Length: 577
Image 1 (cartoon, rainbow, N blue to C red):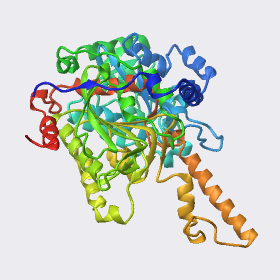
Image 2 (cartoon, rainbow, N blue to C red):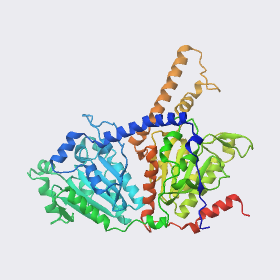
Image 3 (cartoon, rainbow, N blue to C red):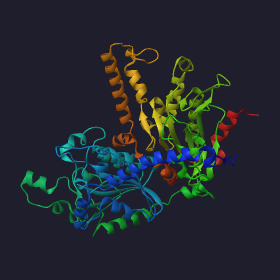
Image 4 (cartoon, rainbow, N blue to C red):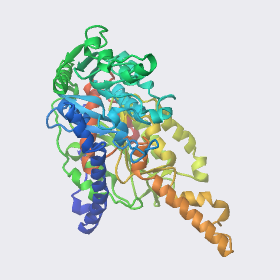
């Protein structure tokens, strides 16, 4: 039983996709991913070179320069929430807040994955905009779920006051950041803070619960800044006088250490992280190690059609994500529309659930086929059992979504799909193992929920540039909206030309609006997804998340493969002999 029966999967690219189709798919995804690169650069620029120069003129570094120094050399950082507030305008001046004015990223520091939260001091001096608190809290939640050391690079002038009503009150308002600080502390998650400059009001509270707080000579932490005190008490005094390192390191003891500048502070933070226990990932790998797939991950852009109506083989996607393209499919004879099983990413065991595409067999009508990318009774039961097994065995679970929804109609209701679906929802809602969701293309209706969509609390949800997140497709929704005006063949009933045109225009407008709403950048702007990734970087991003899942020893149960319940599940599904 100790042996995990992985087998080679996948085919050479030319066996599954001819050169012309492959090139066409690459061209289509290339256009989308070039836009992704361009928009990432736009966000990373903050308010532009003029504001970067202002930061440098003060002898300080920008948030991303600090992050680059903090992370291990040559190791990529993985941002989350890049496109929060993307292209939204605030206040009478119609100002923008790229990335909501804060950088949140997974960064490896001395071999340990950490969550870094850094105020972007090139955007309104790192102030908090609408969605900034939610973005910070989302990053803190990821750190709490994975028990990752959390590092705050604080340079924050407080709330962006013209929009304070949209970031101060409410359950996820700015004050909830401090509750998350407390929950991380209560869970024993290390928190380190470096204060580099402004640290006013809520920004002043943010570092205080951290285990260690450093301040540069330019830094200050205050409940109220000098301008407010001058107005309220007519006292002329600087913010450094009120709450600089002289006060908080030597008098109040709200900070621990003062350092001369940004670079010295970054080195101090790196030394502290080095003192933490090392990652448990190598222990969990055993004698194995990361091995590239036998089929290049770069081929994903050529085998995944940009048109969501065109099919592909989900096994070929897994073959380009899993180490050595080795995979153990569990329960293959049940619920053919769903593909689930176990492989390694970065040398670490990972569970996968994916939607098959095209046509699959219908067990109720032998010899006939029915559409895949839909949840039927057998598939729902299968992935629910698999999800429970992964949770029981401590195996992180990746959901690869390309789903059109649940089966519908008289037969589906008689089979009790509502009950089977609720079983799956209960399972995913109560799992404690880290789960990660990837929206490859379609993410529609209740199928999006059932496949561990963001409302069901995956640690991270990623979208590709092809993803389409909505209740239903635009044309379907337009038909539903104008259903009373249509016959059984969905043709307009009205005979009057003016009335027909009005209905046609209305349906077209609904379809176009839904198509715009399905843009992945809209989802990312609203925090309905965590990050947009290129297909070629998907394996690297997942490898980081899986390694982070295995990093903290003792925070959850990770079984060795001899006692996996997965083995029993596979044997029972095949029939004991």
